[in-house]
Length: 307
Length: 321
Ligand SMILES: Cc1ncc(C[n+]2csc(CCOP(=O)(O)OP(=O)(O)O)c2C)c(N)n1
Ligand SMILES: [Mg+2]
Image (cartoon, rainbow over all chains, first blue to last red; front, side, top):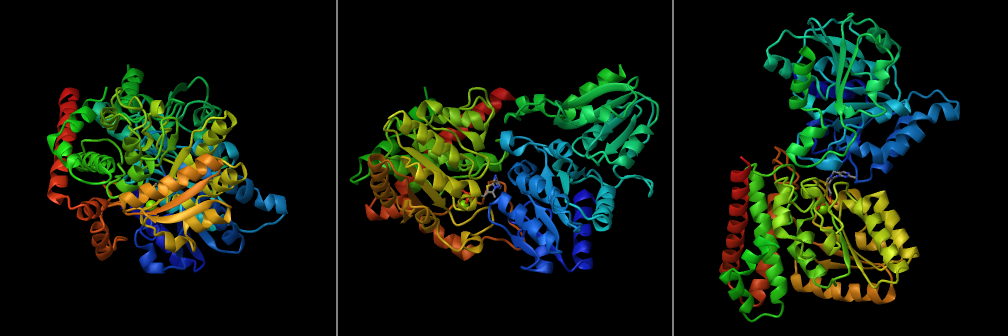
């Protein structure tokens, strides 16, 4: 099963196991974004509810449900729309327990398909996940089916408002060999030599393909899913092989994940990072390719580094 | 310079049609223009000749055409993700529109915006918008600036039925009302927001919502060219002279799916019977019947416009290969 199929299967299981589960969002009965396909047919109108186009409103509605003991999933049409719901995520959900001096299990998960398949222009191409890192909201960028399995365990064992970014570039990613005990916040996906590449789900697939195209021995490729950099994640990052490190991720270069990651890497080994320029994504393919981190930029960068 | 518009205007078949006896030849011409161009764009998008999602305006022509026929040179327009119709009826450059959809630097947004952002500031066309409802408060701001500058400009603010539930749109109704803004809101109720019907997520009409904010509002048949024109004359006159907002809820229908490449699902939101009943209410059919214009003659022009756009587009593809 690929990433999106695994995610869906886990979502179904969580509905079967927890009768309090509810899935909200725009056009979710019709599974417009291809995520919750079949969920409405199986669980019906009271569990899978179409929302009007009112992101701020239904994000807050989700929190109210969670405060009342429901297990809530809020789907956004695309990740850029988190900017419309952010008040209810950061000011309300994220701060709720502390401000109220309460200890309620807030089972609320925001589901955010992220990234561009090309030609989506300024409003539909963003990967805004580092914003959530900055705000301190628990967030994951899922990259492989393994991540989907682990994240649902995490949501179950440690309920808390959580944002899950599903990169459209990773929807079809297949299972990779891995250790059951790997920390899924940060783990090695490809075993290699000479170089450590750290990436996220927005770039993992392209890196894998690029390495094959360049036809060189693979470097180590590590996947970062836990973009809040929780303790275990930092520990795993600090334990990587003593080799030069290159970070490849399709998010803005300024004040972003790259500078955060650098804190945990021995500075003698930090080679640099390949990121999206901190610019709006233009529509035309030629202009877009110059801004985002697509395969061309990855191949050029790898060739340069290998040289 | 607008090579495509010039070529289309020169079509003998179009000239003939316009010469026939009828009360609103310009409305007919503009509607056919949009229909031909949009059908060409749909065909090109289906063949994957164009980049990105395309939201087609086919079926909704009467709204943009009827409403914007009342706009004056220094008026302004804000648009939606389904914005080609507004762009064309406001006189936007058609060649630059097609160039934009191909991502060329000669496009109306220099290849930066694509379909969901088409704009032509020289015509006070402030742009299509990828964020549903995003243009509505901006329209209020432009309208307030006009008012403060003692300009007599009216802002035409388009948005969809789906957008009408967005907080920022309802907040804008309130802003427009209490700031007493010269703005004409046009809600294009094309029956769907993606797969969602307005009645499934809202208990009131958009017109009633606006009334609740103290805005003069009405519901009209968005599939009828003449009705859209006459209601827009009345409402724009009101907003212009009284310097107050007004709203038209135009009930219409999009003839294609939400965006061109949206696929039919096993269990689909679109009911075939409802779909065909709306296709029969085509504003062009209605107009042609009323004034005894042969539908065949209309279709010939549409086809010729389509050919012009497709061949222009093929040339671009050849050159950029
Ligand atoms: C704020 C926001 N939410 C969701 C979307 C995704 N989306 C794009 S078009 C659309 C439906 C819009 O419906 P409506 O306003 O009726 O316009 P229509 O497409 O019918 O012309 C949705 C939900 C978006 N672009 N922006
Ligand atoms: Mg609609």
